[in-house]
Length: 315
Length: 255
Image 1 (spheres, rainbow over the protein chains, first blue to last red):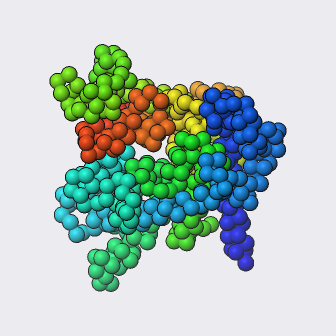
Image 2 (cartoon, rainbow over the protein chains, first blue to last red):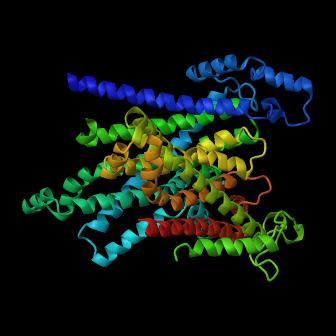
Image 3 (spheres, rainbow over the protein chains, first blue to last red):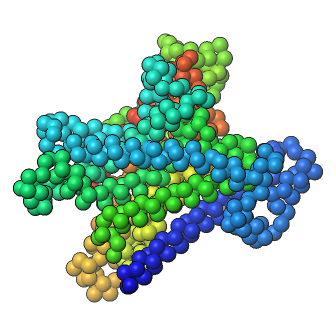
């Protein structure tokens, strides 16, 4: 009974914290757009807009209300998922555009997380386990260190050039029929830095376990090498692995924006950039808050996973 | 020795930037033309001299990265040490804030803030990066201070009547600086990459003198003029690697 109450309290604290983070990000966007020098309506219309037009845009964005009233409206809009109409596509609600773009970005990011975790864990196992010769294991470790220092921004365009423009193995950037191959290629690129981080942390955790008595017992009972490492060692090392995935989620989201731009894929990043370029304020606010919420939600999932796997974290 | 690559890049780029002053100058006849004797790195969109663009972008990017890393260091280290000395709620709050900020998509924050600026400059970018740059330094210094705060020399200083500020400045900070400085290289490299990434997606400085805009041009002209893409990618990689290496030099000295 006590344990359940504590678990509930911990969950509640986590949700409250997540809400606070989203609220802070939303407020930052709201006040940055309104308090920094420069009239938002002039930002939307450009410098040579007529006063009548400026007044019209101010009225649609409710910029003529006092700041407190604007803020209250904005917060209510966030809660009710109604931030008004998109300025550039009249008749379409800003939130509809944001929700529509969440799908492709979530697909890209979740495939990348899956691929990155699998590749990273495989590399870590190979670097520690008895399958390769010691020299090959050292090379895997070096490759992991080198890859984790490699910025996605530097290698993604080069690999894309080699595989798409030269070898024609994958769809070219901007290809509207890229479909599943395009998704897979983009998420593989996105997963490489994650895999390198997972591999490094996983290797370190597994090396620490290498001589642990419970693995000796498992071996003595006649378990195969594969069974010892996968069934007995890996679950114990999974705590640090989930943690490193969680800390890389923000970078992953940033990488997703870069890759959406590189491949001209639809998604949250593309929507944010488009709304930025056309000064579509309701869409911009909604999209940034949605991206923040996506980040916070995935962090919470990672924390829950960690607690489910590792009883030491639950306390 | 490990700081050598960064020093070399900075020196070569500064000389290049001094000799080739107008990186924005267009020369439409030479649009997308490959490397030649007068344009060793070739030309980009509208015939800009890539060597001039890269040299200038490199100088500005490295200056930005080093300043952001140093400002983050100067804010984060004392903050982390002070909150660990204060213990209790403040300490937990700072630690949790560091957790969140370190994992937070800096990129997203930058998009949010830069969208309110009519024409983003490197100054605006630096201001946004500083918002999160202090966190890793604060965390390192907080954790190190946790070890130091119960040691005999700190107790002795307290017993001799030193106030909290005195203990912090004279006894804790000198022992924390070296530990926190280890993060400088990683932070600098992260800023180089973030700056290029913002330029790549079109949020960079308007004059296009940024490694990111070079990459953006290169991707757009991938089939016609692949050299542009290679120049941009190589510069981003080499600069961030040099920053990381220079950070290792501090580590070797301080640790």
